[in-house]
Image (cartoon, rainbow, N blue to C red; front, side):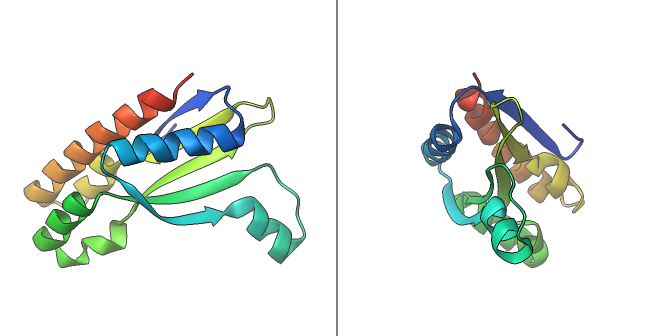
Length: 131
């Protein structure tokens, strides 16, 4: 994907992929704080039909608390966004913000270590969704 993200694809339906990633996030200690339906917003605001696309704002409260304690401005980089989008071939892509890359920008070793720990959990979520 990019230097700030990683992803996987699945042959699950969009609703099934969304449910699977939410379940896998929960298993790793994350809650979904926000769910933005991009396709519905484009339809309502722009009159444009598009494939299903949602942005999930995932947060692990323990890690978030540690990050904010280390750098009170870190909330500008939270939560960890996860995208679920349907592709033209019917597959579904699930993409993850790479917290190690994003939090590494802060230049604080404690925050960098948290980013690595969160990344490890999100990689397990990715792996459980794959296929």
